[in-house]
Every structure is written in C-alpha cells, then in structure tokens.
Image 1 (cartoon, one colour):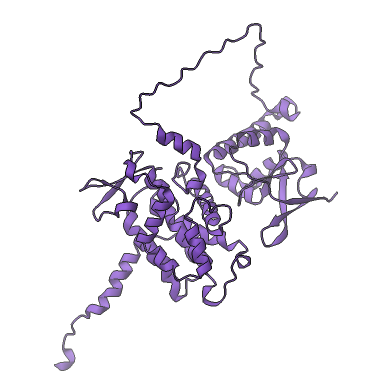
Image 2 (cartoon, rainbow, N blue to C red; image 1 turned 90 degrees about the vertical axis):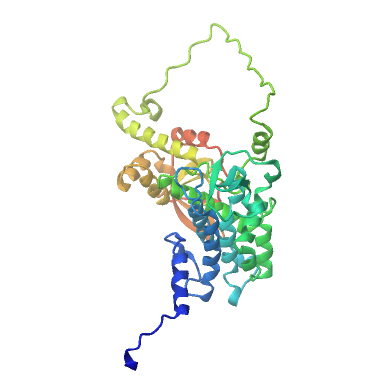
Length: 411
C-alpha cells in the first residue's frame, strides 16, 4: 500500500507556471528574438522584466489613433532601436568588451520602452474609474482600472516636461535599476538621453528617434494612423507647442479679423487646370493613359509623404537627392511602393523606369553612397524627371541633408 500512496502537490512547482502565464501577457514583436543579441543568455530577463512591468502600467491604453495599443508601440520602438544603434560606430565612442559588449543595445532598448510616453501623457489625461484624475508619472499609476482621455486639459501642476515624465516612468518599471549595471560611460549616455539638448550627439537618442520614424512607416502599412502618435518631444515644434498651451479654450481674447484684399481689375484669367500629363511629358495625346498611371503614382506618393510614411534623405528613406536631383533607391523604394499600391513589382518597376531619366540613372551612371562606419557601397538609383521631382520636393515639409553620393558615368 505504500507504493500507491498519493503524493501531495509541491507548492514550489506551481510558481514557474504562474510566472510563465504572466509573461505571456507581453506580446513581443515577431522580429524581437532575431534582433535581440542575448536571447540565449541569462541576461535575457534584462529585456523581459521592464517590458512586463510596463505592460502592467499601460494595460490596454491605446495611443489615440485607432486601436493602436500604446504598449505595442513602445515594444516596436524598443525593438527597432536595437537595430538602429547597432548600425553606428559605437566602439569609436566607448570601446566595450567581454560582458559589456551589448550595453549599448540594452541602454537603447530601455530608452525606447518609455520613449514618447511623456508627450503621450502631456497630450491628455489618465483617469481612474474609481478615483479622480491623476498623473501617473508624478503620483504613480493607480492600482485600479485606468483610462486615457485624449485632448483632456491637464492641471497646471501636472504640465511637466515630457522628458521628466519618461524619466519617472523608467524609474517605476525598474529601467534605471537595470541601467545602473551597465558600463559607466553607457549609463551616462542613457541618463543624458532624457535631456532636451542631447539629440545632436547622443547615439541612444538618435537611434530611438530613427526607430520611431521607421515604426511609424511600418505600422502605417498595416492600416494604423501613426501621424498623430505622441513621440519624442524633439519632433514637436517648441513654438507651436507654446502657442497651443498658451491659448486657453475659455480665452476671450479677440481674434484678428482678416482684411479683404482688393482684386485688381483687367487681370487675365488663370489658365485652366491641366487634366492630362501628356503636354508636360512632351508626348502626344495617345500616351495620356500612360501619363495617368504616372500621375496617379505621384499622387499616391504625395499622400503618403504628407502622412510621414515616405521621407526624403532620412535613414531608410526611399527617396534621396543627388546633384540637386531626386532619385528613388532600388530595390527598397520599389518594394515600399508595391506594398502601398495594387501593382506588381515588375509593373511598378517599368512605370518608375519610364518616369526616370535613363541617362542619369543606373546602369548609365554608377552611384556609390557613403555608409556610416562601412565605407562606400554601390547603390542603384532611378533619377526622376524634373516634372515629377518638383511635385514631390515641393510637397515635402521636412528634407534633411542629402547623403554623400559619388557618380561615375559608365557609358
């Protein structure tokens, strides 16, 4: 009978199961394990623990842009920041070896977890369903169910700088406790990344900002409206923010009345709008169907350019300027436009080739672009005709400095 004695369940054995269920609540992006450098290491909890703590704070709060969860945005940015900072010559800043080899990646990931939360809280209010309004970064996150109310006026004592709010949230999720174990030089850059004057020289801040731009483009392709997602305060004009905060909804200050301008007489009527691109292309009218395809593609580019999905001269952009001309990078630009349009990749490539100057594009001209820390590399460019390039450049609201590109005539 002793052999058939029923064994009592071991209470210690149930602990890992409960912990495992709790960890499954955090849905990391699919590419997280491919870019995370320490998935097989004991330090993998360095990435999971703060994410789990942040998930308990954000819960089901959305970013106010159509069912885009704020927690997903933070995890996407933190994951992409690992890739962005890995492309920089970090050994030239602080040489790391042995157990500190991945400290830059860890610091960038921790910063990306809270990037933009300060601007997110400043643009609205977090209220508890059982208590009054609260500011989680200052007073702590309430234990009960919380809800985010976009565009809700905040109390004056809660109008703190976004970087301060992100600093406080990073403390609450244990990010600073983990960051203190990093190399002292990397930890100093991590602390400096919360400052407003760190953007031009801090690789962590730059990598997180670039990660936000790329994540916005990726999620836009999935149907989310990421144009108004609260991000790092660097991308907000200080003048516009100050003007918006100084204008109170209850203000009775009279607004200036526009004075009508007298229209001079005997002015010739403006020319009728061009409905066909054939005269601009220098082609006969039978090619109007082909020109319509070109113009519809330009309209699509202009629409996505206004949304911030398409950029010029930025990292991972599909357009760049070379010798004062606008070119599309291939095959990156073709793949991005294929996802946006209903055209196949071969058809889209043929249309773009017809819209470009063959004498200035690859293979007639060999282009080499300077890559940071990796020297010169070949790049395939299709230089657009001026009639299309002028429309795209004139519609762009932000154009960064063009990359360094060398051109060599092959014919």
